[in-house]
Image (cartoon, rainbow, N blue to C red; front, side, top):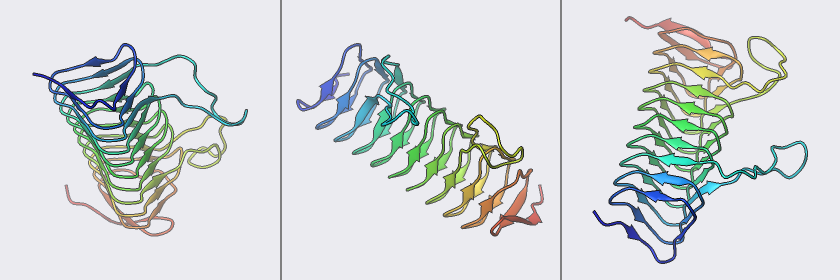
Length: 227
């Protein structure tokens, strides 16, 4: 099938397009990008942005052009920005003005809401939905089939979590089939198990297991689910 590429799109070197790809107005695709079949890229999207910092305290510009892979049947909405070395599996929706930083992988069938920031080194499992204006911090690991509501934040730091101070930046590890209400905060270096419900505005500051319902600041176990 033929591709539909706007005349105002800018496409770099070594860009491989599958069948039935639509690239709309003012899209910029840098080098070394592979895009699968039936992908729709809306206006003003940037794919392949290099990470860069403004001082020695931040991550510096990476000179090497690292590859990006976007799977089949994906939609990337207006104004989204995808950095280098990102892998997006099949059937993903990246909503308006979402940002996905380098070294991140979406396993497939995922939804990233409008205005959401996915920081570097994040892994997101299959069929996970992250709604608008959430922030997933660097090196967070999120399993499959999670529902993460509006304004949820995870934290990556060297000072919090189970083990106290660490020289390594560590994000939280979230299991499968969890449901997070709006404006939940999850601190770094902790784990959340499977099949939990986290109430709106809760602060998760300690590792929790499976099948619980949690509310409060800091969050406490309210009840255990019947399974």
